[in-house]
Amino acid sequence: MSRKAEFAFIIDDDNLFTTMLTRLIKIKNACQKLMIFENGKIAIEYLEKTINSGVELPEVIILDINMPVMDGFQFMENFVALKNDNLKDITIYMVTSSIDARDRERAKEFNEIHDFIVKPITADQIDTLFQVPA
Image (cartoon, rainbow, N blue to C red; front, side):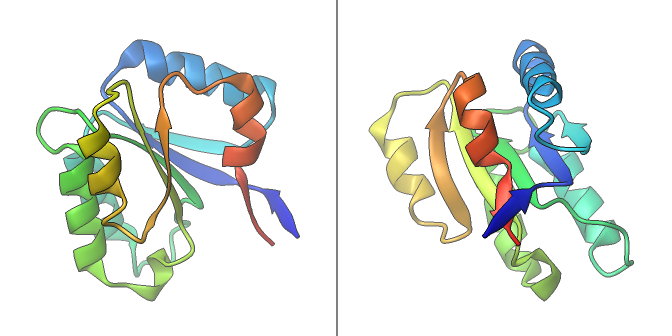
């Protein structure tokens, strides 16, 4: 059994993509609370500060690969290094506009990545991406 996610992160530096994805999420009523980060460094710093504070953590993360400062793979390396039970129930989707097979293969190295999705994310995909185990 599953339910809609209440809280999600979008980690992506593409304003057009984040705007369109946010609209789709609202139209589909897929998630109540969103936080958008323009790179992995800002997102990982937020997680480091809040991980044990009792502050709500996201249930879903939509993570771009190619970003300045800290890309998606660097974010994942830092995420895995946090080794905190509070993070184990977060569903991570790695997204990219790249069709490079090496990116897909590298994403498979992280057990924490639930799926690899080539942009754009469609309205039909939203319901599936924002379902989490009940």
